[in-house]
Structure formats: C-alpha cells, structure tokens
Length: 160
Image 1: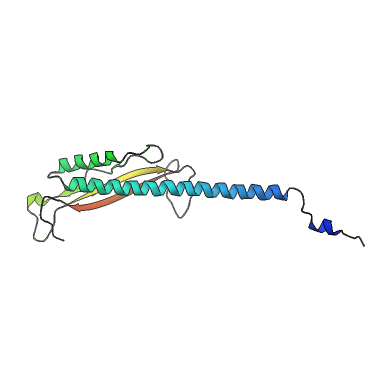
Image 2 (image 1 turned 135 degrees about the vertical axis):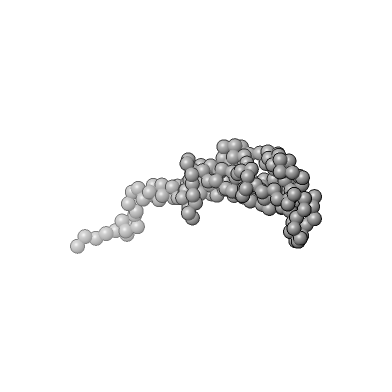
C-alpha cells in the first residue's frame, strides 16, 4: 500500500488560484457593467420625468395651443444632457394623444377643468446592454423612455 504524506493531502493542484481569480474578476466586471447600466437608466428616468413635468407646467400657463407647444419645448431645452448616453428630452408629438391642449374654447362644461397633456421621450444608451427583467433594447443597446403628465390650465377655473 502506498502511503500519502500529510502535506500531499493539503496541497492544491496548480492553477486553481488563477482560475478562481479569473472567475471572480469576470463576475465583478459583470456586476460593474450591470451597475453602470442601472445608474444610467435611473438618471435618464429621473431626467425625463422632471423634464416632462416642467414642460407640462409651462404649457399649462399659456393661453393658446401654439404658445403651449412653444413653452413646453423651451422647458425641455432647459434640461440639457450629454446627448450621447442620455439624449435631450423632446416632445413625442405635438398632436393628440401625445400633446393635448383642451381649454374648451374658454367655456368648459360644468364641473370640468381645462387641461394640457404633454408626452416626452428620451433615449438612454447602455454601455453594456445586459438583457435583464425583460428590458426592450432598440438598436445598439438603447432604451427609449416616455413620460406623460397632465396639468390643469392655470388661467381658468379648476374643478378637482
């Protein structure tokens, strides 16, 4: 019978440490990429949310459709981005249902308030588009976010 020394039982085969380091580095890189993607997505969502809210508020303070569109676009220009990772927020459309300026020609029905609805969109480019939780990436690892707000028109009576 062949005897095995105690040192031979506790020795690890060569290369196991390198393999562990490689696997750990790969997992850490994957986690870092996922964290970077999530950070950009959260920043983009917060930016498009505040831009849409400001655009709707600006449009609600106007007294015509043309002025409301102009006010909404000027409010969106205030929210500047880098343009590559997160694109500048824009109006999705200037027609219904994405942009609605309903003042009922100055005489709304009883107990109905005039309102404006604004829909904005922005694109967020993920540096490492990891497909998680059913995210829908369009070309090149880009996610498109829409946001819609409705505000009462300020210059008329509000019924809540």
